[in-house]
Amino acid sequence: MSYYLNIPGEYPHKGYSLTYLRNKYPALKSMFANGQITPDQNSLQEAKKYGYKSDVTKEQMNTQAVRSENTAQVDKNVEEMMGNYPEFQSLIDSSGYLQSPYQLQSPESLLGTYQEMLNPVNENIQYIGDMAKSTELSPYAQAQMELARANETNQRGLLDQNSVRDTSQAFSELAQTGGLDSGARERVARSMGLSRLLGGQSIANQGNINRLGIASNDASQKFNLLGQLPSLQMSTINPYLSQASKEQGYGVETNKYNIDQAIAERQKKRDYELQMADSKNKAIAAQWTAAGMDRGSIYN
Figure 1 (tube, helix red, strand yellow):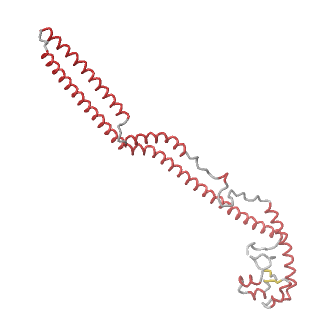
Figure 2 (cartoon, rainbow, N blue to C red):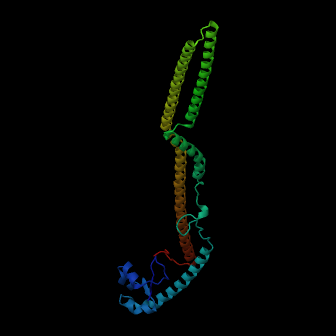
């Protein structure tokens, strides 16, 4: 069962339920009595309970039939007109985000390239760290030790050569003076042997001093390296962290851009829908005007 409203601001050919009318219009009985509400043939008996006057039914029904026919034609014309409007081509996918081809992409990460470049540097720093922490002599100190031992051996060789030369010269001088007896030989040999012993001790003492100096200097160098190790490590970490921070910023900005564009795209769609609704409303009003009827607003 349906009822039709004969008042401005309502769609005249639309059938309303009694429940809708009761909820919207408190003065329902007076509207029935004044002919502002027209029932269809199936609703006559029910309408009479609300004061509807059946003696005006035929006239009102004829009026309603004309209005319904005109309104149906108006709807048809408007639908044809609206069908010529292009559909809104949204750039939003089913998930509510921009379609993939229209999304801004972050630059390709350079962290892998940075890591490849830093690997040999880190290996060198690791080597320096291991050497600085080692209790053994560094390769450079070991080479110095070898050189010190070679010099000590050379000095001992020179000492032996000089001792032999000095002994031979002493014996020659004694022979020339006629004093080369067994006692003189023993005294010369004892003197030269003592001189050689003292020279050897001096060479050994100096060698010990040199080796201690090399070891002490090596330990000092290692200690300095240990102090420099943190700064060396940070010199490789900082560029990597800086690049990682940049890329994180790229990601944040990219996401913000994509979200902002998606929101703007949804707003465009809403604006388009409102524009289309307004165009449809104006088209209906124009059609009603052309039909010579006051149809009121399309919205109830």
